[in-house]
Length: 558
Image (cartoon, rainbow, N blue to C red; front, side, top):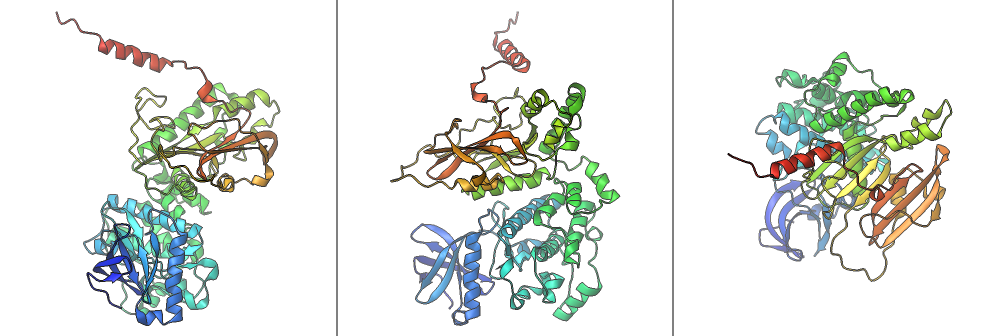
């Protein structure tokens, strides 16, 4: 069925055709009930009579409904009017990546954030067991801000349910070798397609340029694509390496995940990504990992802080100087940040955010407690399990730009910290994770004005335990003792012990508002109630105050 501008489909007024989307016609439309523009994907009448096509159309709706990520085009609903079936989708106002590539190779500074967004969206899909199977530039759209969206999940499938008849579905030019041959398709098949997309983004050319399917299969079998660096001058060797790894014929030789690809890109941690993949890093990668060019200032500051603390520990804490050797440092900052975003989304905070910040901190209270209360020779082995955490990763997210208020803060450089700027804007989130990505602390700012519910909403505390990597059944219910900053209508507490160290008691506190978690904390014997500690000015703050007073005094101009 072909729709024309001005026609109606249920509550949707058709505005203009947008082209084909997989096996459906896509139109720009206006939702007359919610007063917003949407994309309508209509299943042709011929396909509606085909059970297989209809099942695929319905499967696309189910797959999209299971995914919730800012870089995956959202589904708003399914409509059936007068026998016409349609998906109601988020309208992405912008060109496809194929349109952008047609103008020439994308500059590296623009291509890198696009690559990271694709990786994060793929990882979110793969975590839900969803394989896209048709990743290509035409299915990647850019909105007006340059933000990427993966679209057209019509061929996507739950990995566990793929059968032989599904395997070959997709666009041959972007299929992995095993998909072309009708063999098993896995997440690494999507990563092969990702490699082809990254190759095309940076070079403006396809890795394999065949005109027929037999020719394409022959090229994939008997040749390798030209190295991207032969087409792009001064291309970062790390980028070339990760692309060529994605394009390995053997799936086992490709990266294990899309996050591993992101970690290997400049600004991530390629050395950690290679080690996580079980590889022996090349001399070039080791040399590049030691270079400072391309390192983000925030990451550089975090690493400098950890190094400085390590030197202090070497001088003043003789038997703690091997902290970095004892603590499992499994994940680079980019991977932990992606994990933090995923936890935020899973807890129901899906609204767009405008700014984020993250870094590390050393838990000195834990180290001091261990020094003072554990006198056995093997006392520092408690650090090796990573829980309790001696190094934590903190992550902040805000719907507004975060501007630190105190130049003379503890960081001393105007950087965002866990407390500066203040957490006083609805939608702000603070998370702390251990180095394995397990939740240790959560604080959010709920709406300032919120209508009361007719009855108390149930709270799924198990989602918090799951994010913390704990079993709720291992803890007994207790009376709450720790009060969050934000008001909530439900509080709970549990008592137990650290799983790997039963001699260390562990208290867990949580709070929720209207059924949504707003607070979570894992509390140990050394945890201090920081809000109750009397204020004492630091030397830096005293100097700042003196300078401020001096500057405010009237000057004698005579």
